[in-house]
Image (cartoon, rainbow, N blue to C red):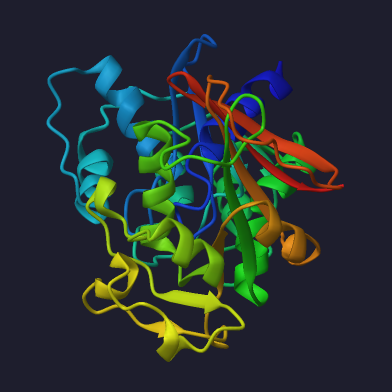
Amino acid sequence: MKEFYMNLALKEAWKYQFLTYPNPAVGCVILDKNGKILSIKAHEKQGQPHAELNAIKEALRLLKPEFSFPKEPNALHEFILKNHQNLLQNATAFVTLEPCAHQGKTPPCAKLFSTLKFKKVFVSVKDENKIASGGAELLKQNGILVEMGILEKEGRELLKPFLKWQKGTFKLFKLALSLNGSALGKFVSNETSRTYAHQIRSMIDLLVVGGETLRKDRPILDSRLCGGKAPNLCILSRQNLESFDKTIPAFKVENRQIFTQIPQNAKFLMYEGGAEFLKSLKEQMDMFLIFHNAKFNKGENVKLDLELKPLFRGDFKEDSYGIYELL
């Protein structure tokens, strides 16, 4: 059963993969003292509550609906420490990454479990970050049973983007396809799928596109569907930047920097384009985000020699999507 609950935490975290940049994607499941699921939550965005704090808040909301929780993470943490009423005494938590033991932009999660008198905390992956690690030790010192390594392989897969952009550059290729595998059409995926893609655009350091995509599709390549910041752009093209048609909407986005080479300080890059662009870059990519709609169209399907391993699959209404890596 430990694997079952940890899998729930992992799946929840994958839903927010890439959106937590520069933080890791983390999930948390909380069971009451009788083993009933109280909450399944994740860290959703940098600067917002960690997965553990989100899950504890949700569990307490279920047990005490009259609670009025503050939104700001530090205030929320303090509110719970003062008002928990031992409602989660002897509860169990499943966390995909060892709870942090330090005060960063948000408070230490290990302190929460200790103060609320949790009985057990199961962890998928030990935190190797010297600043954030030590949570498991703190929990043990406070009499909490800690077990590490539950679905560790899957937990490490979830952490791959975080570890990559911490040490260097993480490259994600985004592709949208019809049911018959065609990438043709102005809007291949639905608005919910496109909103998720726009959320990622608003988080990345750089959006990389080919010159052909700009000339042919004349896109704006912003983050309007989520009200987020438009990404800076890198255009990979044989054509000189000065010779591009500047009436293309992508050139008219305010405060956007446009590059023809990838700057060294860019840690999280998303590439967007069609089959030819992907064909030339596939070996360089760390992961692939591929959307499928539920329609056949008249376009030719994408022909590529590419074998992928699925890491996560989900749905956005009638669309499906997957996060993959090279086999």
